[in-house]
Length: 477
Image 1 (cartoon, rainbow, N blue to C red):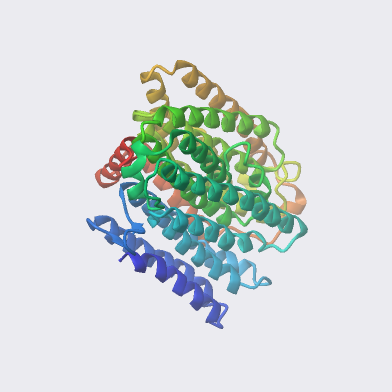
Image 2 (cartoon, one colour):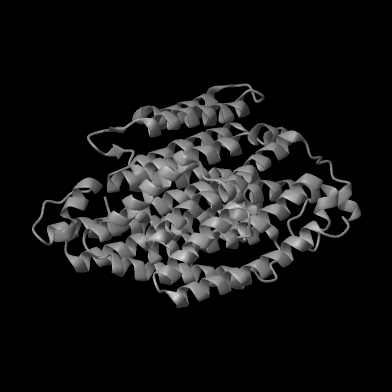
């Protein structure tokens, strides 16, 4: 089972390269996404999914993240055939192969219980996603791809250095050196504290770069702004979740070593900083796709802030991982439809989206309300849980800053969204060829429906996964 989860997407990626039919090739992506969801459901229901002498293991945290990534990819994959039919001038072989390879590497990331293998999986995910940013073959997309690779390479190099520091933390104390997480957890109380602290900071900066935490977020505005909408959704919901998972694994080591307080203080600072940076750059933002990038920076900050607060907020952060990713699917796919309808992503050119593309415009507006924490959508429940955890633990200043920054983001993001959706479309906008159809709207409705469901009702099976994952993070085992 553990090998099938990784190998099937990779084999389908090879098939996408070999199949000569341009019409058949795009359908491999939703086919692979469906198979992956089925396999993941079976894997989650199994008690022991492991392999490669413990290097691969599906633990409670991995189960939650893997299920989310599989569902996110499958819904995005439903958008692929219709999208590629509009881009007949662009070659699809590399695009489809990279999407499926990205799924395989994100899966490997969730299963990895070895520092080296996890590092390789994270970098492979980056390399698989880079050609997707270049799909439009414009000067700006080329610049965005190089920035994504360059900044990501610096981040992954720091993560590798942090891994070395972590290994040396055991050698320094005369212990057996190991890179397997299960062994490191057992050794955690005896690791050298200074070397462990240094390793955690480097690993947070390294994987935080992939996650898009401020100030390591500078690749996001360009990458999200130039990537196709479905790629932006996978980056904002999938790749960032993998990086967050890596950070949580290292946080578990700090918990097991008795250094949780040290890590939590850094998490709270990083979370508040990311929210501040996002709030500043979201005000009067003229590019609505870049606005979504800064929204992602904000919500990455919310994730680490919740872990930093701890207790109930840890559960809220893991729930927010789901609700944020699903709602980002609404925003990125609807933004992609609006971009194609108007031929621009600047608010000076895009007005009256609800009139030009009624479904996409309305869904974009609904996605804004959801992502900014408006009830009854899922992000409201997860953010309220984090706030409740902060107040319950006596962190009143953190709670006040959290509310203030959420309010600033709501106002800043709202002004851009309302300029896009309201008003009268220009004559050039109404003359474009793009027209809405079910294949471009159904995936967005699925994302919005799931976000709404999590705001009204969390299924018992998912509730169990969330609680088990939260306990796993809090206890370090």
